[in-house]
Length: 82
Figure 1 (tube, helix red, strand yellow):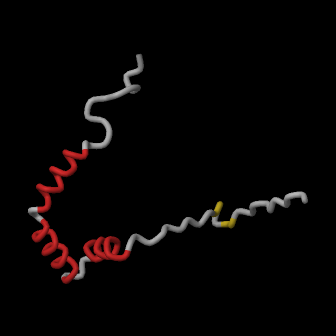
Figure 2 (cartoon, rainbow, N blue to C red):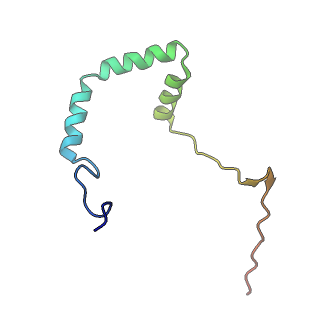
Figure 3 (cartoon, rainbow, N blue to C red):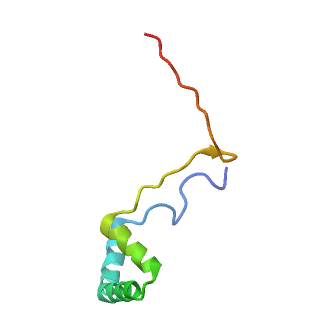
């Protein structure tokens, strides 16, 4: 039998109850977390500013430029018959 196949202990998404328990524990730190975020932004730390902007306005869409040896790939146009 393969040692990588099938169900494994501890694998997969945590249960909803465990997730809610963690959220409850972390919510006690909300005020401290916001103060830290505010402090980092006011100090001009880009990482804090970037994280704030991603949560406030959404992460920008990523664009991928497909090139080969710095040349644009020429993909043939397909013409469908009528």
